[in-house]
Amino acid sequence: MTELKGITWNHSRGFTPLVACCQRYAEQHPGVHVEWHKRSLQAFADFSVEALSKQYDLLIIDHPSVGEAFENKCLVDFHQYLSGDILDELSANSTGLSYKSYTYKNAQLALPVDAATPVSSYRKDLLQQHNLPVPQTWEALIALAEKGKVAMPAIPIDMLMNFYMFCIACGSEPFAASNEIIDERTGNHALQLMAELYSRLDDKMFHCNPIAVAELMSAADDYWYCPFAYGYSNYARKNYAVKPLTFDDVVSYNGQQFLSTLGGTGIAVSAYSSHINEAVHIATMLASAKIQTGLYVEYGGQPAHIKAWRSGYANNLTNNFFINTLPALQRAYVRPRYNGYLQFQDEAGLVLYKFLKHQNSTPANVVQQLNKLYKNSLATHEKPLTI
Image 1 (cartoon, rainbow, N blue to C red):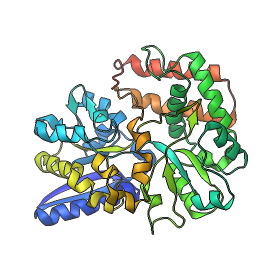
Image 2: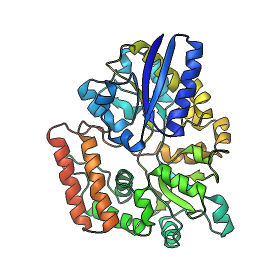
Image 3: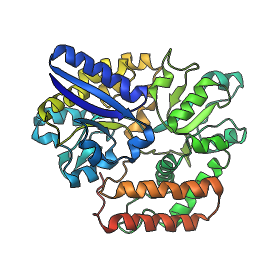
Image 4: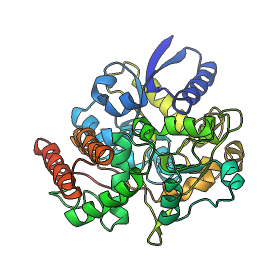
């Protein structure tokens, strides 16, 4: 018996489809078994991929960690184990930049199995009950927030992802310059817009991640609309949430829809594994069109293969979650992935959190702090690599 260990995060979207698909794989490939372990969503963002690679054969990772993984040589490059035809098919059928987000210095360090970006969600029944349209513009969003009916994740990591989005909306892409994350004018404008929205949120939002917000909205009637949160198709499915959510694209600002920040996950194989060939075979199975459009989505997964997102079957399961939110995912912004970025991400989110929760600084000072943190993250590492 070949026993492999895998690590993912502890939500139905991240755990259940892996277990189901690998159970079926074991039935078809007697003698190969994967035991999946899980960790919190915060630990998923925080814990070192290098450390995990020494404990697990298969790792569900997010793309900002590939720079660290490349430099530490702790994950296999799929180019060394898979044919060009297989990788070309996965690249051509990637939802948005999911596939390319795991490509680093010509190495393919993970295969995309899950795709996500911040999108909107709402209680259709409550908006209809109060004769209110779904917000389509920034102004309509602020008006609904004034009523206290808007929920949104407001912990540090989600604030930072939204900061990138707001910077783009204000005219400049983050990390475009080599010496700063953003220029002061754009950064100030972005922070002022963010403060306009965050100041109208219930204080409990400053303790909520996207899962917590979806749970709040689907379990009670206090909040009607969420403008920006990483989408979870589970909450649009029958028999999962008490009161299902409807998901859609995000609002517009100055006539243009926001570009939110790409999330999702890929499956990687540890370079330390004693069963690399078996692990690569399982990873390829999980990323394949057949599994992504079938078992993976059936068991609560949120695939990264474009055929699943366009599938009538998958959309019937999820009240059109995939087709409704696909435009947002296709245009999503990809974060830097250099070795040292994760250090910046951890520290920068806290700076934004202190400003937006406590209003204890000025936008100009926050931009200066962020730019300093960015320079520090580069000091002992490398120039950022962007797509």
